[in-house]
Image 1: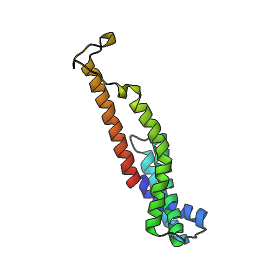
Image 2: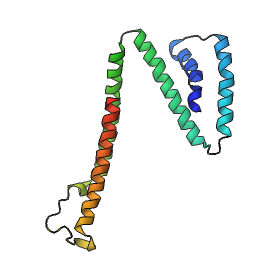
Image 3: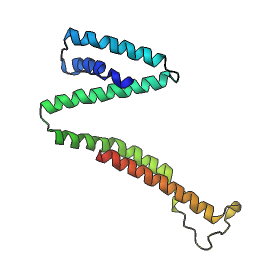
Length: 155
């Protein structure tokens, strides 16, 4: 339902960023949409203020990106160049977070190599095969995060 407010926010952001004026008829037609959105959101059974604010913030950010992209496409960039620079910026912004998360996920226990019997008992009664399973689970989580990151970069 929050996505329905995109035209409302786009009109406001286009005016603030580009000075683009919208006809009064269009603005008037957006008011009932905004009021309906507020009514629907407030009567939602699972409504939370935090969730609503997060959804609105996401919508506003997408509208800012659309208006900014429109201004760049009208000027100096082609669609391919804009896609390239957007992807590069996403990579630069997400890489530190990804690397930090990988450090936490991987940790020092990922580098444990257990030699000998598969069921050798380690200190504190931990069975070697249990440690290997935990390391495999951490490795699969790290691999999954890597795939998500690569997907975001290529998107």
